[in-house]
Length: 269
Image (cartoon, rainbow, N blue to C red; front, side, top):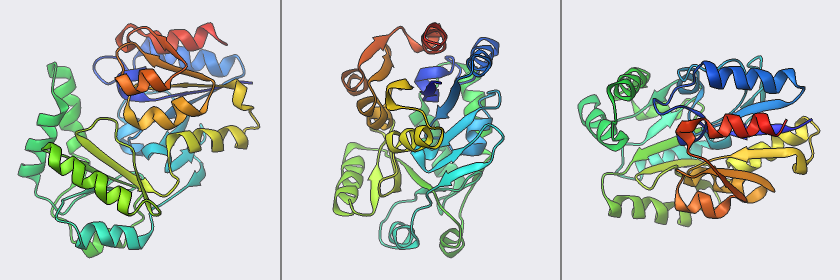
């Protein structure tokens, strides 16, 4: 039995950041052949569901949760309250605090939406519509103590300038025993608890399913995919991926928007 694990945006999904018949049919063929497919994404559960995928295993929020095909939790790794308190009260930033299905921020909707839409670099109306839909899952101007009372699994921050991202990098280095910052791109900070990475989560799922490392195939294009691309022998990056992901992967395949990922999986059943 093999385990196929794939990032979503820029890897498995089409250019509209959505799944479609060809992708879903391919995933079903993987299961029908007796293998396992898992999404491995930085998205939380609600944002993952909005991509239109068929039922599948799910590694969400950069490894903070692992669910089986039926949606049952295999494992979860919430951030500790001390870290959340630090980010809420001892930094000047309006972070996005993610639970399984919701996203909370102390920031206001107008400012956040402007930054969010600029960072997404809309290429067509369909992508813009999807992003606008995703914004409905956010809760703005939240009471910080209310956020602190929730189980938070991942914290995001859209960085509006280079110095801002560097400050977050320094913060993550200073608290390296508490947090990991594994962004998909350098304009976005993506913070999880200590030891929580995509690479560790794929390994955890493989062990749970009694699948050997040599039977694990991983696919990713971004900086938050590096931990799994470096960890497994069968690691693949689309030719459209970041330079860092290409260097970390064992192999390169075709452009993500030509269905190279699902096609490669089906060729290796």
